[in-house]
Image (cartoon, rainbow, N blue to C red; front, side, top):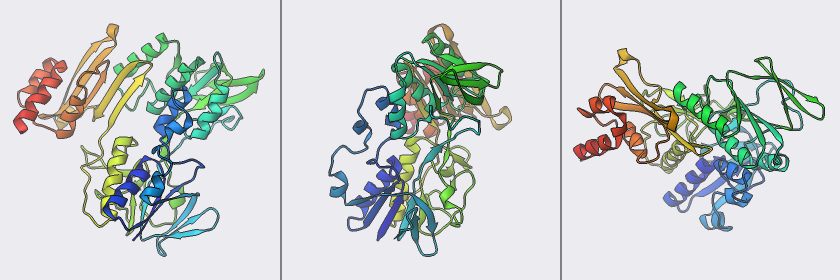
Length: 417
């Protein structure tokens, strides 16, 4: 059996290692398009703020790990999947046959179609090579403007702040981390960040970047203009699927997969950020680009590529973020459900102490939660959301006092046992 995996990030690597355990004699090829060993993009900010060397981003530290696991690393860019002949084609024209194929190509950064985005001192921060270029330019006191204050943007922002730059963040949404935080929570994070010395503009977009007086002049949709020595684009990501056009694989925003990570084409699987998989709560196909889901999907795909029948329980939103020392989390359907769908919610706000808690219910179960400043037992929120445990009398108790979530988790876990 010959397994080929396109994408050598955490998803691809976990799938390769799982396949090796399941099929000791199989051939396994792991393809990446960067001149680097498999590494974690989530570790890039730690490299950028100087906490680790670039080798610290590597997913496996032992120099002979891949040789021992008999995982064949291939550097190259796949430009085509030929499902009929069961081959992948590289930009060089070379072809590699497969028996079963896993697409784990993840996401790529979005560059808004704005004049000046291709200037020399405008960068994305997605690859280790990007980070090396930024580290060479983001010197203490330099003026850095970052576009985007989403989850990834906030992680990059913290790394930049640690370098001592004069930092400004521009976010199109009405709050920071708009796809993870409620309006109140996002506003609280903005206040915290501003008190830490970072300027934040929300409800604003970049309309043009030009060279001016030896620097960059960044024009905003709100009418203002900001000077910068360096611009970082962290405006979000999208699935890396363009090379699959003409393959016959069903795609919408991402690759459509079933509960076993199978695509619409026989013997081709997909896992990670590149997929549109069933949502944990609704069952509808959703993009959910977070590493815990990606790794779960990698294991499921590998089991099924090896002939198993593993099934995903659905993609669950799980976000934990440390923004300049302020920890925030969101789980599940943190936005809540409509009243006519059995939705109810409670919000506890302590702005002075930067503590916030929102719980969202559907009928007798917790379906989502958001927190700021809660670090003790916060995993219990995920547990309640993921188990969908019937709350019984605990629903009324939590509506009255949402801080009792740990007691509710223990009570429902004991009842289930």
